[in-house]
Amino acid sequence: MLQIKNVVKKFGEKLAVDNISLDIKPGEVFGLLGPNGAGKSTTIKMITGILKPNEGDIFIDDFSIIKNNIEAKRLIGYVPDSPDMFLGLRGIDYLAFITSVYKLNKDETEKYIKELSTALNIYNDLNSFISEYSHGMRQKIFIIGALLHKPKYLILDEPLVGLDPASSHLIKEIMSDVTKNGNSVLYSTHVLDVAEKVCDRIGIIDKGKLRFAGTIDELKKKQNRNVDLENLFLQLTSEQ
Image 1: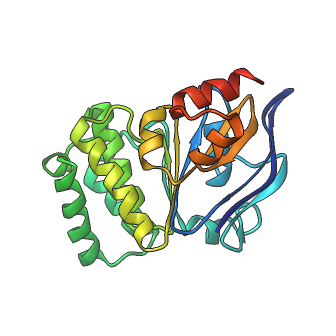
Image 2: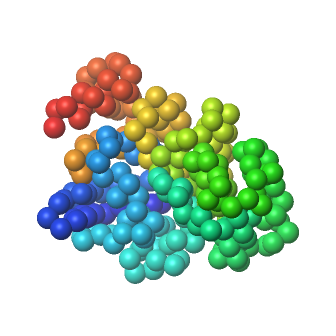
């Protein structure tokens, strides 16, 4: 289980994440929802060890991301909200780097790279530099990189931005496939109709606070309205 326990993050005097506690259960797609600037990406950067909380801790299984960060990170596959990284590498070199970091079997991983890159229609571009990729292609290469070691926790920060419809559909299928083996997906987005279709549970963050965590049916009961997620979301966040 992935556990967020009483996490606080400040940037100077600004309180970006305000005492959030949350569990991501085995075998579920959990959607982290909120408007831009709500604290979603900051929360994810703390989960992945990029940022350190001012207070609280995060556990990936039994490993603290603060005290046991290497062990915790081995369990995570992460796709950031901005794919503008490693621009001086060719796509295939980046994937070779990931293979080396996780000490994966080279032959097996090469087959997996071909399978994923062909499905995402990027196989013929692997020898090009990432700097030459479109936004959507960069997103695809980092999605492949996140999947190579078959992580127990796949963490996606706005992964569908810039993807064509066919690739977006495939990523949704991949999220579903990940959970079939008891692994988990944490999926951050502000695209509510996608979250409504793919997520088993959701958490809604607004102004750094966790306003709700549970199923959409539970949110309907909480708000006493049998409407779609967009209307429930707007009602909940406008009340704060």
